[in-house]
Image (tube, rainbow, N blue to C red):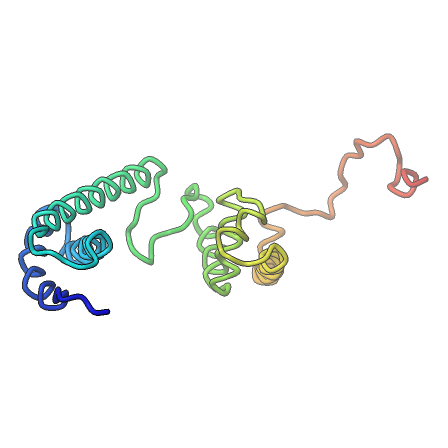
Length: 191
């Protein structure tokens, strides 16, 4: 059963005016086109048989969606500014190290960027996002075992790439350490 309303012709006729209107409310032409597309989808869902009398509602939908998108973008920018994350492009540093740690941070960032995207995502969410494997699995759509495996493989790869920095970062591990246990050797602690 086909509707008598010609959606394609209506879209072709109204789209330029709607994009122009949306362009006044959002930051870019691409955003305006997205807004118009969403408005048409809403209009089609609400009035599947179509009706030229409802065209003013289409403009109202464009306005509502554009304002929602603008508010959302402003909130995102404010959130990023508050968390000191500057979106400066792909070459922006992922870390904000102290001056004496800049070289080490650059090496670590390079090693992190060399990981496969799935592993890098899991490491970032686990270490910097402080998410659990359950939360990461729900977010990425993978199983907990897959997420844990990606995390393990990523840490192994990072360990191999960064092993030469271990002594610089941690210090000399061969130096005697203070025994804070009441046992003289770990063997004595075992039953």
